Image (cartoon, rainbow over all chains, first blue to last red; front, side, top):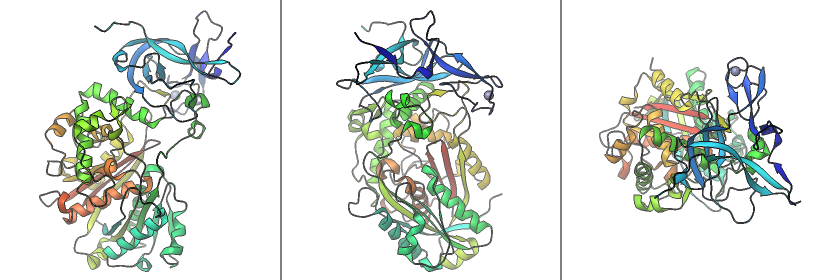
Length: 145
Length: 383
Ligand SMILES: [Zn+2]
């Protein structure tokens, strides 16, 4: 039986919520409304220290994307043979977050594509624990002709 | 407004690119000796020095090789802004009236594949690196991808920038990359991060550059071809700019440090972007040159596609950019890159560019360096 863990609990929130997928955890500045990801104890825009936890939206659109064609150096971790992966930025309204994509081809990663949050197996710990990271997946898959 | 009170009177530069067996410190001494000789001076004439390197230790210890004259040698360590910061410090030392002759130095020697960063060093959790995000090329690629989408820039424009860099490098005897590379070969080289291929990126490199600077009065006694520093400005990023290693961005976009530094430099010089006859701007990869063309004010956003297609940024074009091949052809020795740009402008304004000389007796030059963690240095130079 495989046990799993999140890549870092502190970047998630709503771990026990109704959703299958926990939300990404940000901080909202009570002074100027800026939303950060991950959590921050002070605001980079106004310097305020009154920051409250906020769950980021689970749906957004692709703001920019690229495909990582070569394996990054450590501390990047992956299992087996390296597979190119999509990554980029997702516009969630209050904040634009950097994320992996479930798709590894630019045809699927056009700017403006609607996407939703999911979890993706990233690598396996030495004890066999599967480590999950966050990723965004296109919500409408148009089959190419 | 414009104060022509500090001039570049001597320049010295080593070969760029790999020089096995030659230390960074030896390159630095070579550049200093050349710059002093070019100014008709010697190291003991220097009343001060500002110098820096990213990876070759403490610049000030070079005095044991240059000569122990007692002059103050101040280390400058400011990432990609090292050269620019050294020049700004020297300019201010002369403007203060306390000194009238001094030296500026930048040098580096990076092994292949340098510039690995630990996420903890930049305030990020280890998850960020495990996730595969500590990769600078992802930043360049996602930034230009968005820019191409917003302003209608194509892959052809990216290839043209690199093609121009290698062609200009082939006309610069000190450049690392000496062979022209056709656009189709640039486009078909291995994809690093879409839309940028391997030949659209610079590599960590080696090199040293030194400048001798003087007050205008002292300059008159030393050279008939002084190049004046009309402005030298450094700015750091403001909230809302898009920088490397960003786990998030604000939806409220702000202009980059480049835009701020360029605007302030042009204002301080009393010279506008339209007056620039030759420019050297940061071209870490092809997309960077394209974005920086507009961010510095040398053209409007979106205009780059046509300017490049029409050859307007070539040596014989309307606004020649990176006439020595930029970092794409010279490599990136962090401490030396900013001063290499100023060296090239000085060569061009003196009319000593040889095969790569900009025609029409250029009078006004502009330089721009940009780097982590979001800083830009710009100069306006004239003769
Ligand atoms: Zn705030």
